[in-house]
Each structure stands twice: as structure tokens, then as C-alpha cells.
Length: 219
Image 1: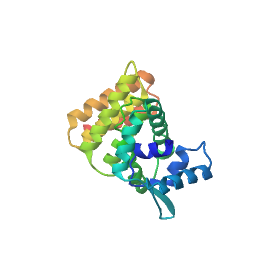
Image 2: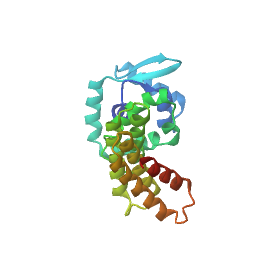
Image 3: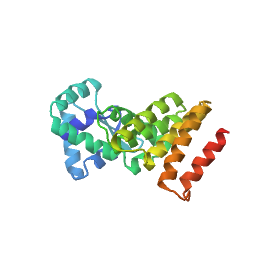
Image 4: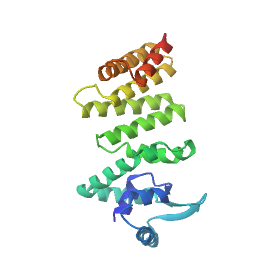
């Protein structure tokens, strides 16, 4: 039951077997395989081998029907969404190689629509922004996700004096710089530097050096 609900919450076009193993790590491999076979027998999912890995897919219409069902089970829905956020915000998933990240990003974009404000969600949004900035070169989309990330962080913390907020402000500044909007870039870089100096009052930190360098690049 949890597995088919989980399939409805992420991108269903290609779900790699290793993600399923990580998501349901409390179950052994035989239990996971048996659950997949039961879902296949009911024609709820498809199964194939691709590039040496087994891939699960689920039709969008089936996803929609199951999603509506899980949304009525608030306790299970919340539990699975929190597990998904924890999985996809882990450093292991965030540091995938570029070609793997292109597959992961489809899941992240769907997950980003969860109505959950948490550090994990902020991290996911920030990572989507990084993807569109560095890999896809879509700066407008990058800015959108980074601003969403910043909004969540500011709703979580009582003030801006947090390394995560400073880093996100710096990332936003970088996107504005890449867009050629230097006044906006400088504004965000300076906000980031101000926070970093409140956290590290002796200026003895590599993030401050990076921030100063970014400001210098604007001038």
C-alpha cells in the first residue's frame, strides 16, 4: 500500500530500483520485489531493465487516481511526504553526477509542489535552482526556485542570521549577476555578506572570502 502511494507522489515515468530500496530500506529486498510483482499483476506499474538497472513506471492516470486516494489519508500522506523529503534532500541524492541528476530532477520538481515548509524542502528547491542555473542554463527558472527556497527559510527561522539564508541570498545574487542585473546582484551579495559577518565576526571564514570576491566581481 505504501509503495503504490509513494509511486503516485513522485515522477512516475522512470523510478529507479535503487530509489525504491532507499525509500523502503526497513524492508528486505525480497519483500520489495514481491510488492512490485503484486502491483505488476494488478497492472498498476510497469517494469523493465534499462542500462543495467531495473526501472518502474506508472501511468499518469493511475497516479492521479491513487494520489486522490492518499490525499484523503492525511496521516499516511504526511508520513510518506516527509520520508520523500528526507530521501531527496540527502547529500547522497543532491550530489549526483549531472547525467543522473537529470533523472532525479523530475522527481524533485514534482516533490517541490508539496505544501510543506521545512529545511528539507528548502534544500530541494535550492538544488532545483542550482540545476537550472548550472546544468540547464535556465536562469529564470533558477531564480524562481531559489526565491521559493529563501521564502521557506525565512518562515522557519526567527531572523536572517543563518548560514543557509546567507548561502541562498548569495546564490540569488549569482543568478542576477549572470542575468546582467548587477544592482540586484550587488544587493543580494551584500545582504549575504552582512549575515555572514554577524555569524563570523572576525571575518575568518571562507564563505566571507567568497562573498567579498563576488561583490568585487560586480564592480
